[in-house]
Amino acid sequence: MNIENIKTALKEGIPFEITTAAGEKFRVEDEFQVALNPKRGVAILLREDGSPTLVSLLTITSLEYLSPNQPNT
Image (cartoon, rainbow, N blue to C red):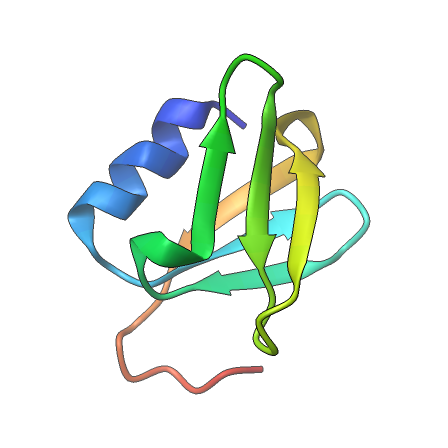
C-alpha cells in the first residue's frame, strides 16, 4: 500500500477500512485514528476500543471506502 493512498483517503474525509495481510480490519472515520511515519514505513491505527496498533505499510492489502452510515462489522 502506498502511503499517498492513505493520505488521500484522510484528506477526502470519507470513512474507509484498511485490511492487512493477516486479515485484520481497521475502520477509519477521521484523521485522528491514523498516524503515519513514512520514514519507517508504518502506520499507527487505533482500534474501535481506542487501543493503538503498529502496522507495516507493506502488510496493508486494501483500503476500501465506506458509506458514512455503514455499520461497524
